[in-house]
Length: 479
Ligand code: ADP
Ligand code: MG
Image (tube, rainbow, N blue to C red; front, side, top):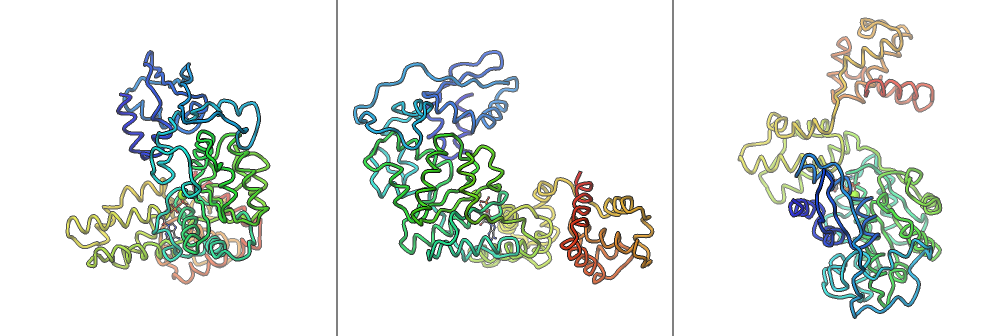
């Protein structure tokens, strides 16, 4: 069973990450619904507990229904030092607090000095000393993540501009640049585009995920190499940390804070991406948080229809380079853009399915085919579909008008405004087109709907009360 769980973990996490954290985890036994696992260090125990306990639990439950607890223990004896490692001559990086100690165990991650530490640093196995070149290799960059393949839209225009400015490497104007957005909205794409461009220009660039940062920090403690991680970090021109929300642990955060300060004070650029704003990174040290918030903080918001449409079209073109006979009719592009609303990743996923279906069955992409092929994607992306009827019902109740009034031709002010609000909400919250909404509101013309949408948008910008009312109505509809 443990072998199967490990196999799954390896598949899910990838070889590098799996080896780093799980290669030295042993199964000790399994009684009364409790699985007992042992690890070589306390540090590893904490790391697995805080990062992987849910995933482990899920995988174990798959194997065996009645497992309800996973117990991690630290194996008693510390293995003797490998002969190659010298005793720690200098204090560990960053903090010198008492809880530094467990990390200073000779083999903190449970790896021998010759085991896959270098795998993450460019795949050179069997080396415990890191030359400066090794050290400069961060997580690998995907060559497809460049500015040219990033589609600009209203929701990311600022982030894109800031990223380009940073990549250009002129005067450091905002430091750090902090990008935040929910998953799939292009953070990693932008980060790597910056890294790729800066590297091409010959700058010393280090791109790391928070998890890599963490790992490198530990590896540096372990290797006690001539060039410490700290020195490395401070000798680069551009540091990019992706998925900052995963940077846990006091010592690591302290080290990160020192690095941040040193780089910023030395006018070196730092770029950070996370899934939330600095203020919402709860587990982060206050000083780090305020330093992060002190540069430029940019949000990437949900893509609007136009951007989604542009991304799919872009991806379709990219696919056409491999499959010249692959085409997606306009109506299908519209359909996907309207219905797959969550993220860039789902849009790509949707298009990949269309390609696969098209290539495998040799049948053209049609609206009908798209509806069937993408059914689950669309359902997953929109757990609850708001219906125009719901909107009409809630709005008329809230403003104390009848539904008949909403659909009527009456032009009294007390009815016009709620009607416009209802049309606005219908546009915002359902995938319906303007003509369709018009039809459902007493056979109005689509320009009337458009006018209503614009009007409410405009008013809500100026009128905070209205904006809050809209929020309230949206929440009632979402519930
Ligand atoms: P995040 O890191 O924010 O979770 P990613 O950068 O991994 O998101 O983006 C997910 C996928 O969507 C990537 O393949 C990316 O190329 C694509 N994507 C997201 N936004 C855009 C965009 N504006 N233009 C082109 N591709 C995008
Ligand atoms: Mg990402």
